[in-house]
Image (cartoon, rainbow, N blue to C red; front, side, top):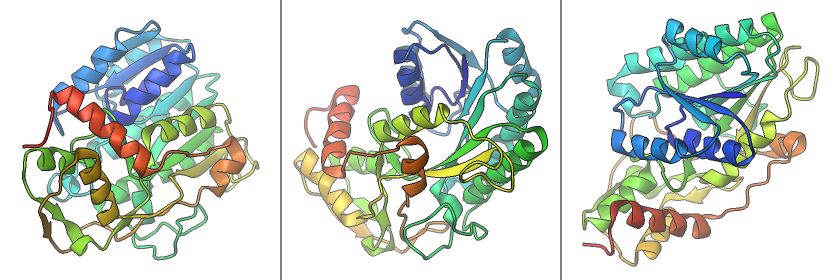
Length: 333
């Protein structure tokens, strides 16, 4: 049985679907906060609640009593996939305490639960490519230094890695952190660029392009990311094993597409899928942002066979098809 936090979130929803399809029992937790459209979160949850094997709790991961109660109610939980977090680099500039609550206290509560759960097989948790911060060497490798965060969001995700490392070392908790690189796809997050670009283009509005368009991202299709999560879940680390850190059963891996695509090509791919061109307002780099992300996934391939297959040219049209269907939009304004 698996405890899955962030079950009504984008990656959590797709991960839950894959786990249920594989016959797993999933205990989903989400607080359904209002960072973005709660209607979308509830629509995802509605899909999950139709499935056998899924149990949902509306709870805050930073609420120690609530989370302990969930664990006590399900003594069969033997794996934890922790995907809940306060996301968003720009939001962290204006709402910093949201990140302290969800990204620091939340993981600490879950690590304490993991510490006291006898027979826990694996603690898998979400990190972010943002931890690479001001690094200029490309592609980003798990062996790179990650001590120069350029946003509070990045700092909290790195702190989560360090907290997990210490708990893994002290209490022998098998733990794996996954640094996600710009995940996109159906049922995605409205605060992500591909989602807001699609929305604005369909509405006939111009889009804002940061850093004059001189940016690259390692765009990663949701199904590829989920395949990585499921694969690594079955490969818990052991102390002194490959890629383990400081003799603890703890590792981190990159889950990216292993290619850096230009922002302007990304926008062009969306325009092509929509069948319309749009006005672009060029703007300077946004605070806390970085010019390029690019994942070295050699270790992920080696340890658990991670093999992303979906290019933007295939993924974006599938997202656009979902978007039109979900929002009932036939053509651009």
